[in-house]
Image 1 (cartoon, rainbow, N blue to C red):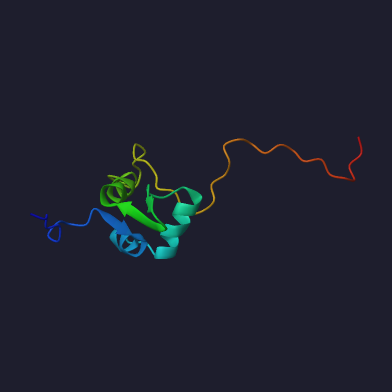
Image 2 (image 1 turned 90 degrees about the horizontal axis):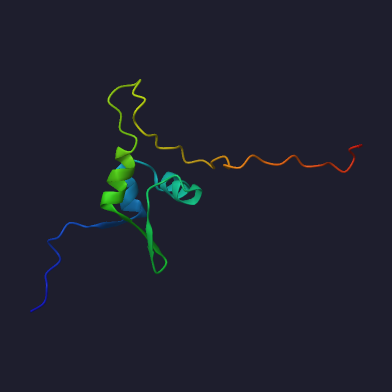
Length: 97
């Protein structure tokens, strides 16, 4: 007897479906993945998939009760984040000591 999985809801979404699920463009979701600011994902072969519960948790991490709610987390913008370690000053070639 074989199992019938056709009536189960999808637990994993590829990037186009995940972007529709969270309401972002495909490119924005890809940028979040590149910069490490987005939801957790998995790679199956060469395919990127997102678990539905991970997408929901990522969206919920930015949930707020009102505009001045300071207890809520923040979903970062899809941009390169500043490093945690401050950069060291570089010495220029023409500098005098």
